[in-house]
Image (cartoon, rainbow, N blue to C red; front, side, top):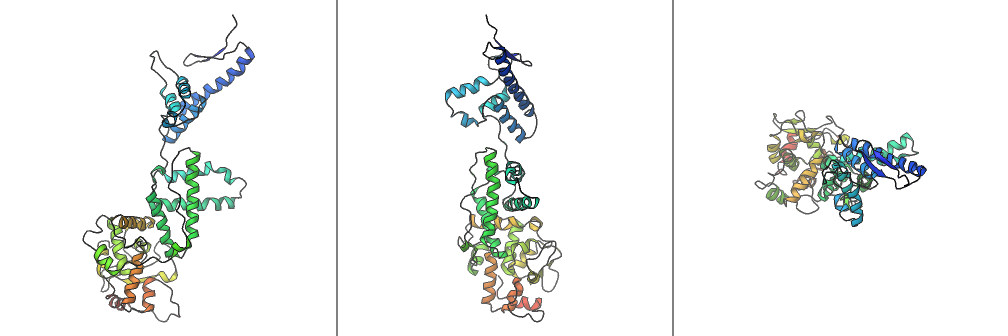
Amino acid sequence: MPKRYAVVEPRKYVWVSLKTDSASTAKMKGDAVWDKMIAAWEAKLAGADGDAEQLFAAARDLAEAKGFRYLRADKVAQLPLNEIRDRLSAVTRVGDKPNSIDMREAAALLGGAKEPSLIISRCLDLYWTLAKDRALGKSPDQIRRWENPRKKAIQNLIQVIGDKPIDQITGDDMLDFRNWWVERLEMEGLTPNSANKDLTHLGDVLKTVNKMKRLGLVLPLNDLSLKDIEAKRRPPFSREWITDRLLASGALNGLNPEARTILLAMINTGCRPSELAALSGNTIHLACDVPYISIEPEGRQMKSAYARRTIPLLGISLDAIRAYPEGFPRYRGSSAGLSATVNKYLRENGLMETPDHVLYSLRHSFEDRMLAAGIDDRIRRDLFGHRLTREKYGDGATLKQKQTMLQAAAL
């Protein structure tokens, strides 16, 4: 009877038939089978400990070592019956009991390994490895210019929606991010191209990770680009809408206290949300004859030299800020999420006058009320931090004079 050759897995004493009578063929096949066994052992060892990503990667490697591609359980269930049988047959039996199997192998071959949730910041870390081919041949300066806009786009998104798992990013999250950019266009005089580049780089990072890590997610990244028309001025809230809806009893109770106070402070100051978020005990002045805030370059860069100014506090804005004499620590370090938070709350509670209104519309409303009160262009520009279109003479109005003039515009 001819010899039949086999490879033995020493730790489990499992015979693997090579189905050949030839010693040379057996040696060649045996080496390949042995390599697969070694790969499987290494994958199991890698999956014995580690974080969620390492465990999942080990399960994928173990499936490959056994000659299969890792598939989720729902995908395995859709395979032809003979392929499912092959996977089941490849799972090693352990012990004497008929139903005892190697659970790591079962998870790897039948799709039971738990897929890790990747937070947004982790996606950026992975991206540099997954997209390293795109950096080939680039000079250090070209690599820097390739990396920086992607870092900025991811940082912007995290500031607005938080560093959440990418499988939890919703369509509303991306609309909040888009609206945050629309407001920036207006506040900083940017073009839609700035926002669209950010959206493109953001999509590049998240889509690359989704594809290369085989996550199979449907990311809400389509139809977000901005058109030139969206850079137009946002409509102001009417005086009636502010008094009857925004200031109605309990209307803003569901908004976190700091965001609510900043909204109320905007009504009679016309400040940018980021300017109010940056206020501190040094720039809020309540213990004086004319309570006021001063917009200064305290720990941040000013939008322009004209943005530095003093604004008296009146009415609902004064009452609100009295509760926060030291400013707003929640938003001082990063005001990016402020507008998104307020806009989302106002939309969900029917407090937007039209679909085109946003938090920044309160700034335009303040200007309209000053115009209706007959306040001089020089004073309006000083209060808004805008450049005067003619030669500027003198120091302008005093705080007391500003307070007197704003009485008619304040709510």
